[in-house]
Length: 227
Image (cartoon, rainbow, N blue to C red; front, side, top):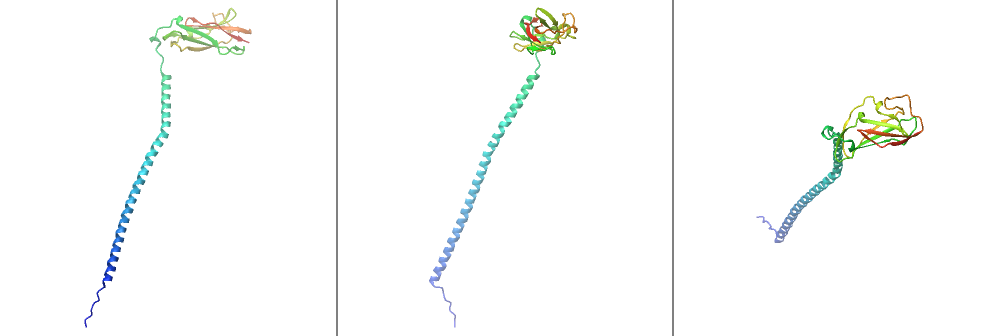
């Protein structure tokens, strides 16, 4: 006897074809999903990178902005310091390069540091020499050209000139509006102008006056009190 093979029915073929079609659709869907996920991931990564770049770019100006004022202030401060140092280091004009001051072009004043003194104190006189013209001029304002006189009433009781051990010259350029000042102390001694005597000292309470003569120009008398 011969064995006969039984062929699948048409229904079985249809089910097999349907299953293969469903499997194919599933595979296609999986491929599409995988591609979609990869694309979405790439976009998110790009967006994150762009955000990070924007954040970095935004932070840099803020950081720079907060540091710049300090740097600018320090630079201005340094410049400013340099400018001050340069101004203080600038030498005055050469006295020989400007005309000599005429006494009439100068103004001399004198005053005391305090309005009154006790006889245990030495009065300090402050003199000032000013150029009253509009152009600079030079003058010898050293101790060789200075004389301070102290008086009481009409009498002169002390002169500075005989008490200056080593008179010296000091040529200076006097700029308009920039007075030259100096100080002289009085030890209360009395002299007649010919010698620096230390034998007699002022001791009478009352009003005294001081007058300065510098470069041939005399000041007004300035009154002060000894008590």
